[in-house]
Image 1: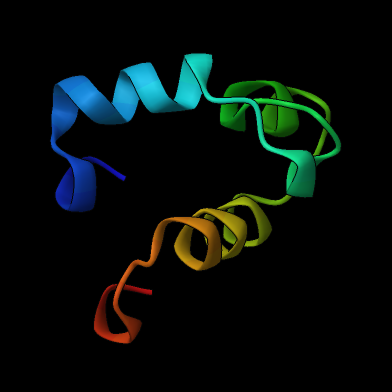
Image 2 (image 1 turned 180 degrees about the vertical axis):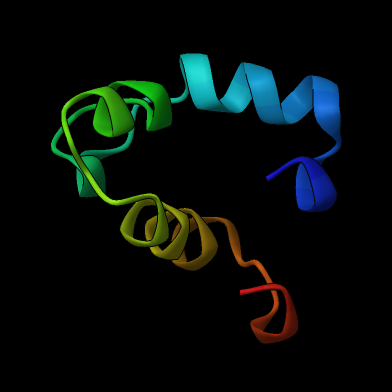
Length: 55
């Protein structure tokens, strides 16, 4: 996430942005709940329009 969003925004996004695709969780909450990092990243990529080459 740091590479795509930049360090400051990535931290804010991970902590503050609630995503319905993650069950109403933030990235951090999803990871803490046991979601696989690759699955969380896929959700972020789809919802935020991350290019295929960065996935």
